Image 1 (cartoon, one colour):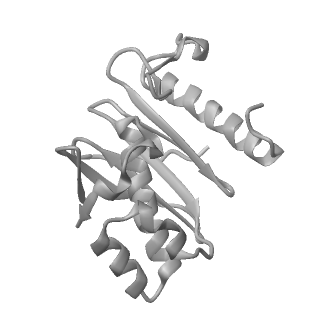
Image 2 (cartoon, helix red, strand yellow):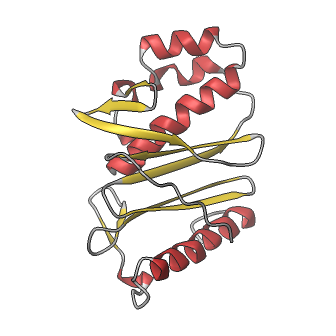
Length: 176
């Protein structure tokens, strides 16, 4: 009930259902979601090496798993934005590129989802200075850590990115 809108409550519930299925697929059939632990910044954690992250926007819900390191995912609906309202998020070069982009909204949400996925994987969310994330050609650097970025296939008008701290050899999409 932490979401005001019923649509957000449904997306969150569907995320939990996807989490439950993913846990089953990763050999954690008996794990009770009530036993999730949370780090100091309230990122949920599982016992062992399996990591997960959930994101939802519009009619898209993503629950991503990784057994070889940290993982973060972010999905957003591409919509009009006022770039200047978000200047504090981006380093000078990235912000300049966003202002010069033909499709400013698409470029903005690409840069945004990459940063949000990294911050979610790292466990800090937007409490950290996203300006310190430097991204180029599928790899980002943040806090002396390399992050590997993959676009995630989503319907039109959405954009999503996956971030891991180890290269992803296989990306398996399971539709429910």
